[in-house]
Image 1 (cartoon, rainbow, N blue to C red):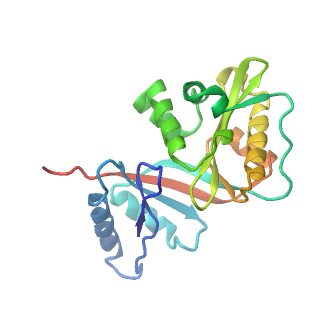
Image 2 (cartoon, rainbow, N blue to C red):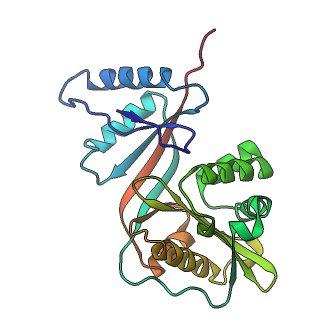
Length: 251
């Protein structure tokens, strides 16, 4: 089963059911995925698969990964899943002033993304920046965020007096809202500002009536994982994100 979520530039493989006891199970799976790659619509980049563990929908996770890589998928993030644990909203930051997207405008937010993504520990974000360049990556990332379900007040820039410290972006789909991006500019890292950004952004989402808040982190991004733990999030699931490029059309 395939699904295209509005705002995303790829098609998600929502379900891949196989009779793993069959000796030709991997051959059948590769055939199904090849057909799906060939059917990706014009304008979308390819297929995406989230391999969560544990997850009752993803039996045989080790064999499933082998199958996906054989079918042309590659890992773009080895990460953890996080979810808001519930309870009262965290206290908003008292040492930062926040301005929403409506306050600062698109250009300022794009520039903030470019600054925050410098020297990121997230492999996928780092690869996108290397591929698209500093400004190209920031523009593309902002464009994706804007196409997702969001409100202007969910996109926040945090300032210490007049200097930018970092950003928080909340966005989602029909199922949930995500901590879509949170980070601190390089020169202000190591001072706990990520907690100010994450807790304030989480409070904004909860006060907007969003009860299901999720997030993903790269396993290598240990500082971000610790920030989620400190801010009331829990993680009991790992997630491999795999992508396969769309098959080129012959004309």
